[in-house]
Image (cartoon, rainbow, N blue to C red; front, top):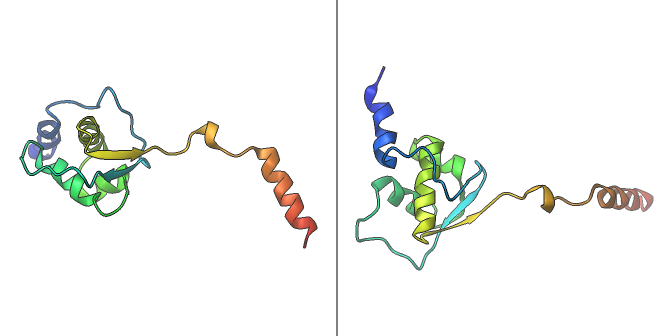
Length: 116
């Protein structure tokens, strides 16, 4: 068993396993705020990597974890820190309240079929 593989995520997050103020889904999209630069070095190298990865386009939490070879839980903690520092913007996935009405969808389908 590789001890370093388990200690590294613990060290990156300072022992935190989740960020209490924010919840992120695997498909939450993260984008770096371009007007904020972080050359002062107060961020962990992994947090800097997240910002660089998300500077050009929005990237899902799961994709960030895969690209950086980090556990999803670590990425969520780091993204929570970045959000607290106003360095990222987050677009959460649509919730049940954002889903279209099933009756409306069925009426649209019936209408389309009647025109065929």
